[in-house]
Structures are given as structure tokens and as C-alpha cells.
Amino acid sequence: QVQLVESGGGLVKPGGSLRLSCAASEFTFSDYYMNWIRQAPGKGLEWVSYISPSGDSIYYADSVKGRFTVSRDNAKNSLYLQMNSLRTDDTAVYYCARGDVGKWKSPFGYWGQGTLVTVSS
Amino acid sequence: EIVLTQSPGTLSLSPGERGTLSCRASQSVSSSNLAWYQQKPGQAPRLLIYGASSRATGIPDRFSGSGSGTDFTLSISRLEPEDFAVYYCQQYGSLPRTFGQGTKVEIK
Image 1: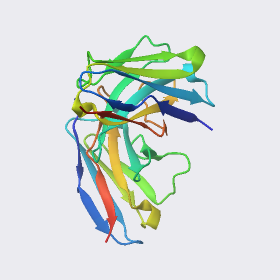
Image 2: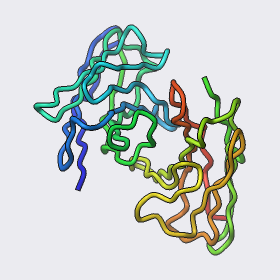
Image 3: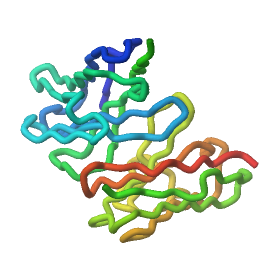
């Protein structure tokens, strides 16, 4: 069945950088829009970014624009989130999520288990 | 940006009771691009409802969604012990994608 496995989380100081990865399997990765969603401890869900199947269409939430960069490597079935200039309010569990094939307007039917990013001095 | 407001914040119910959760949008959600998710502690969210009223694969028929425009509802006909969780609505018709703040359904 569809699998999404995030990695790369950890503890980082304010102003630091971190790169998250999401390894996809059991589906044709290159056919799907992919998303990053985060959840601060004890808080609700916040959508962060999406990237189109070919990578030519990308969108970010205002809260991360200019600091985060989403990318993908379809040959490696992998999604990435490069996070720079991290702030304490970026502390959250980061999930990758997949929608429906080829649709940019799609609910998130599959989620990874999440990776925790903690920004603290 | 479409702001989604869920009510109530917490719903205290007993197993077997009916639960009704509300999600109100600050502007019309195009083509009913509205989803509901369930999240249990320590787990990723699970898609329950999409297109405002269609159940996702494997979701029991005690879950139903309704509504259009700016007002949407998730109903749980008879609460099972495993249904006590946090529920989020989300719109995916416009950018940025947005979620409601969540409704916690707790055991009374």
C-alpha cells in the first residue's frame, strides 16, 4: 500500500537550517501533487507548501515564504523541504501528504507518520 | 485566504450518541472542495470525507458530511469508542489550503 516516510527532523538553533525528506513508495510518485503540512505541539494543522508532479508549480504559506524551499526528485521517489532561517515558531511535526492523481485541487488521502522539528537555543 | 471556523471547540458525548460538528468558511468554498479529517493522539490525520459529502475509502457509514458554500457539517450517527478524537475541516479549492482549528470529541 501507499507509503510516505518522513525523515530529517531534529533539534536546531534559531536561525539554523534543516532539510526534511519524504520517501514515497507503492505508487507512481511522478503523477501526484505533494504537500507539506505541519502541526505545532498541541496545536492544529497548518498547510505549508505544495509542489506539482513535474515541480514547475510551487506554492507556499505566507508564514514560510522566502525561508522554505520545496523540491522533489521523481527518479528517487522523494520529496524535500529545505528549511532556512528557522524560528522557534517553526517547531512542529512536519507531515508529507499526497492527494489524488494529477489533481491540484485534492484532499490529502495519504499522510506520512511525521517528523519532529524542534527549534530551540 | 479562506478562514475556517469550527464549532464547538469541544464536544462531550457518550458512546452511542450522535455527534454534529460544524465548519463555517469566511467565503464560499468552490465546488464543495471541503474535507474532514480525524486525528488521534500521536497519529497522522486520516481523511474521512471529501467533496463535502463523499466518504473516503474504508470509512464507516456512521460518518456523513453535508453542506455547501460557507456552511458544512460532519455528523457521526452513533459514536463508537474509537471515534473519540479531534476532527478538522479543510478547504482545498483555493490557495493557501486552510484547516479549521479542530473540534475535540471527548467521552462524557
